[in-house]
Amino acid sequence: MLRGLFRLLTILLVINNSYSNSKDSTILFIGHAYGSHFDDDSKLDPVLLNFINTNNKILFDKIIFGGDFIYNCNDVTEIKNFKNSVSTFDYRFVIGNHENCDKILEISKVNFGDFNYYEKQNDNLLIYLNTSSNYSKDKVKDMFDYIKNLIEKENPNNVVLFTHQVIFSKNDFYLRVNSRKFYDFGNNLYQMLYDDFNGIDTKFHFFSGDIGAFNYTPFAFFDNYDNFYLYAVGIGNKNNSKAILVNLGEDISVDFIDINNSKIESKENYTSLKVQLYQLPKLLLFHIKSNIYIFAFLILGLSYIYFKNSKFYVKKI
Image 1 (cartoon, helix red, strand yellow):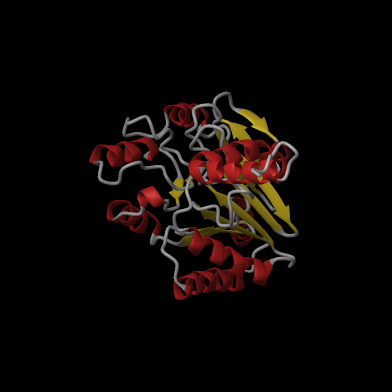
Image 2: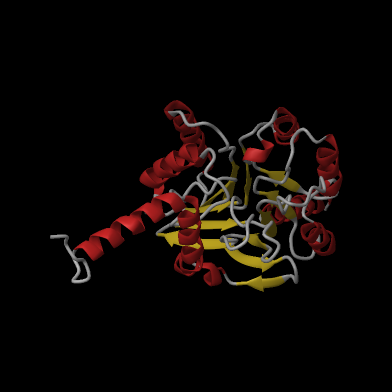
């Protein structure tokens, strides 16, 4: 009888352990979490702080900071405030160009083991990458090999990659980002991933946090190419504060969320076509302002050609 009872307890423990390993969880992914460039407050964005403190354990189980969660790496107070703000949360982060300093890199190594690291939940392989790096062919190849070896080892149904740089945006007319710093590295890495993995059965989900910092720039984005699902999000523009909720079950589901009012929004609201139509007038105006002398010279030249070849132009005799 005791042997039978022991066997029953063993079965229950195995079932319970299997259940805990396959339990669904929801990630909150947030980009540019320090918020506005104009608020010198040495802390995370106030709207975000209010949101995470109100909704912890209700809407999400874990926070992932998609880079630029620190404004000034030399600000000891800001780093201390960040640690205090997330001390009660299960959190991860990837390195943005603002965190590319020894103090934050050391936190990453101590807390997560390295600057590039991974974990597996259910059949989902989560990979956290530091793409804030100057380009070299060898360094990109090393990171690609790191990802490929993990996929071969873990054999997941879904590969989820978190980066700061929007590595799938090769120019601002596809998706305008906060800056183009370190993008040669990220773009080349994405191209290698696309060439090797696009079109296979495994799904790849890319989450990036380098948008939304300025007025009239994109703040949420979604696109899809076969088995590649592309997402970007970021705050700091003072008008639109969006984040992403990623549900990690047997499969992955994704929604955007407005952190001002906790309203969940469909990713279809931010498809590439809608975002590109939104950003185009502002992007063109930005390029005109940035190259005003070139445009002025071009307009004068075209005006001269027009009037020279029109009936209003009178040649001197």
